[in-house]
Image 1 (cartoon, rainbow, N blue to C red):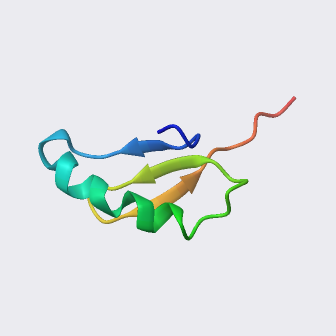
Image 2: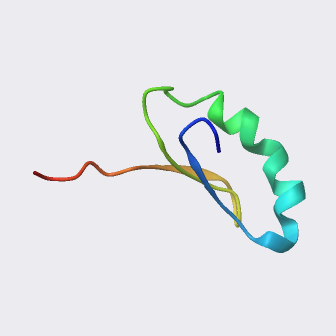
Amino acid sequence: MNDGNLVSGRINHFSDDIRIYPSITAQLDPAKKGIVHIGVGAYFEAFKKKKE
């Protein structure tokens, strides 16, 4: 996505499932980026910071 998040879902239902994306991201902290899973259920998984 162009907002810095990735989307994970099943391709055969993607056009239906992606409709909930704006609703999910509206509830997230804009400073946190990660993966929005929409395949089975819908949930957000933040990217993990790399250890230096």
